[in-house]
Length: 218
Length: 148
Image (cartoon, rainbow over all chains, first blue to last red):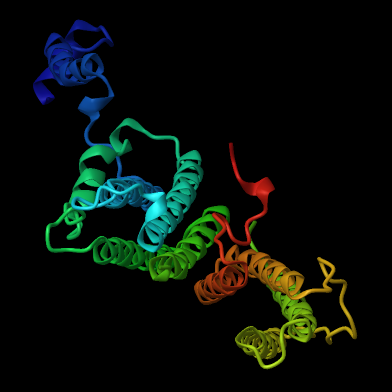
């Protein structure tokens, strides 16, 4: 550096030396390359704020819940709608069991509609940046298929009523868990989002006795 | 929407008023249900729950230096009641009002109050479901606050 200064001074010109220019060009090369590569080359973006992460997780959980209810509906309609493997009677004319199955299907469909409404409201509060776009397909499907009762609806030794109760019981458990989780996440959320979470948590808690009542109808 | 200490007391007072109105309303509910029935028993249980909640809110308000308003002699009922079925509708309506009041408390940033408010919203929604026999997607949340 000292050598550069002397050379520059000798020439009487205040401009930078040739060596300094070369060094500057070399130093600026990575910046130029960065500009060409775009924002991604600047490094990993900062992690999203906690409320964004919590909201994204709530959306994913609600998506999984909707998928779970869709799977439950398929099971219930497959088990009750066929009229029984051995009987083959007309569903509605069979009396009690078919009526109870219809009540369970109606209850599950009604609750599923509420989850769809929850999901719409949660999604409306978040503008998805690309990195946070959730992929409901695999996780929701995994949750639904992870259900122990999946595929049990048409089991040979299992009655339709037992299968129905199992499906409803698992939904009740999932609802209680979801409600508790939402209430446990309220701290630090913006007021409006906290209120939405609390309201959805309350709704999901009410699904427990509602589904239980549907399962007890005979 | 940041709540100052003054507005927290105001929210607590609003919740207290909802609880007092519910306590009054459950008296009307119970009087229209069959004597000694399970439903009348449930109404009595819920009435006591609201009385205790009012006491708790009164203590909270006083602890914050506020003055709790005394209960009114009578309250305007949200629905007319002449039958047992209407009494059940009234009970559900009372619970919805209580849920609304507590949901306002959830906007308070204080974790303890927020958690308490959320718990009370859930409890009110559960009682409303028991009276109504059906569920609501957004208990306590005004329709105007929903998007889309």
